[in-house]
Image (tube, rainbow, N blue to C red; front, top):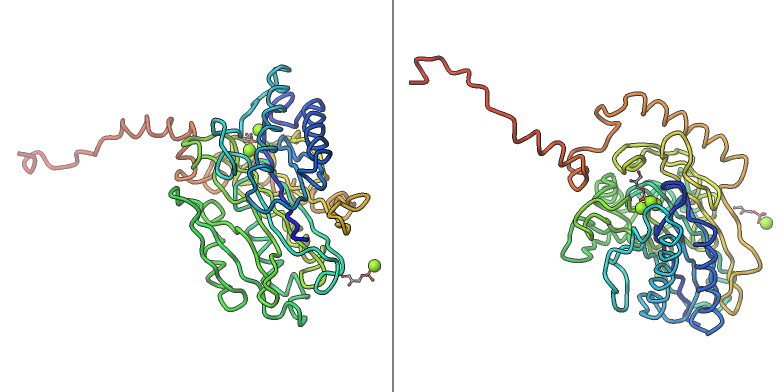
Length: 381
Ligand code: 13P
Ligand code: 13P
Ligand code: MG
Ligand code: MG
Ligand code: MG
Ligand code: MG
C-alpha cells in the first residue's frame, strides 16, 4: 500500500493569552478526526498540541496534497476556531489566513508536512517508525541545524558510517523568501555539505523541505517550511514548523535524530516573534507559561501496523529526565540572552522585524532623520 503521513498544524486560539488551546478545542479536533477515521477518509489520526499550536497527525492513502485530507484539516481548524471564539479565547483563527481555500491548503496558513512510501513491512522496512516534531514560538528554520547534524554529521549520527547510509542524504532546500511559489534546490550531503550549511545557516530565509536517502531514494524527512508573514503580508504570529522524520534501519536511530536538540540552539522567536532565544525540548502538550515566551519543541514517535494504523501507543521523546538537564541549560541560556534586553543579537535584525509593528515604530523615526549640515559657511554659498 502507498501510505501517506500528513501532519497539519495551526494556531487557532488559546486560553489565558498565547499559551495553549482549550480542552474544548482539542475535543472538537479529536471529534472531527474520529469522524474522518470512521468514514474511511483517514486510516488513523493523533492530536496533540505544543504551546498554542494544535497538530493533527494522520495516515491515509490519498497521497500528498490531497484536497479531501487538507479540507478535513481546514474544516476541523475552523470548528476549533468557532469554539475559541465562543469562549472568547485569544487569537481565534489566527493561522487561517486564506478565505475558504479550495483543495490543498499549503500556503493558506497552517503548517503542512507530508511524505509517502510503499508500506509493506517487508524488504527495506520490516518495521515502520517515525517521529513528529512540533515547535511553537519560533521561526521556520528551527530544524535546520538539528536535521543537518542528524543527516549530515557523523559526530551526531554515527549511523552515517554504516553501509545503508554511507552515501548520505539529499537535502531539498526551500528559499522561503520567494513569494512567487516554492523555490527549491537539491544538494547532496556529504559532497555539498558546506553549500548546504551556507544556506541553512540563515534560519529565516532557507529551510529544509525534505531529506531523501541517496542509497534508496526513500524520503526520510519532510518539514513545513513557510513564512506566515510572506502569506499574510504582515506579522501574524510565528511560523512554528512541524517535521516528520522516519527512523531506524536505512535512516538514523531516534537518539541520532534527537541528540542535536541537546544544544538548545538559539532561534528567532520568543516574545512578539522578535527575539533570539534557545529552543527548549518539552513533553507533548506543554503550554507556553515560562518567564519568557521560550521557543519550544516536542517530539512524538509512532510505529505503524500493517493496516497503516498507529500501533497501540506512542513515545513522548522529550518526556525523560535526561532532557531536564537540557531544559535547565536552555533556561540558563535564555536568562543570559535576555539580560541584554533589546540590544544587538538578543533581538532579530531589522529585516526580520520588517513586517511587524516594530518596523512602524522605526520607520516613523527614519522620516525624522536629517543629514548633518557640517559644510563651512563659505562652501555653502
Ligand atoms: P536494542 O538492543 O535495544 O535494540 O538497541 C540497539 C541499538 O542499535 C540502539 O541504536
Ligand atoms: P504564536 O505564533 O504562537 O501566536 O506566537 C507568536 C508571538 O508573537 C509570541 O509573542
Ligand atoms: Mg499564538
Ligand atoms: Mg503558536
Ligand atoms: Mg504561530
Ligand atoms: Mg531493543
